[in-house]
Image: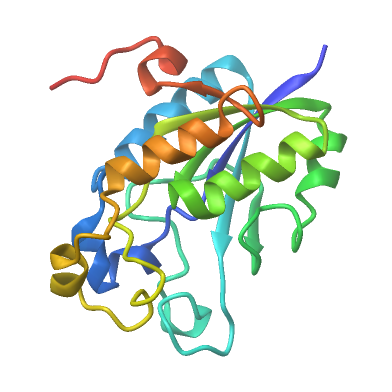
Length: 199
């Protein structure tokens, strides 16, 4: 019988030091992911932590600046792999596939930051590699997304004022539409953990 692995993607301080963090839909992403991690451990699933790095860029994802670390409150256990990647998906620039093969993993559960970027890309690649993929959309986080023509230089106020901007909720919904039934099964945090979020 194959195992399940929870892949925690880019839940790192790099995002919290950028101005657009104020646009994030789930500022409590670390707590959401921690619920998933605890459930996965209880089930005996493999937990794999992935961090995004952009060495030499001088930005928030450059390891020299100290932000390429898990958001405070998330603690890998000894033996839980921590991978660093330089691509959007968690496979191309890491040994993730070999690791999953070694552990007999046939299903992966995707969580992390950003919903439509590294999380969605990882889910698509995993599906193409033959894994059963569960995408826990409310255990991912993203931000309002500016139109491509202004994205690189736009400030937060400009993004919010532009009628072409997609809200974080719209980004998540489009991601779910694209993945569901084709690349992944969409599940909620409550469905996965069996414990409703306390309000």
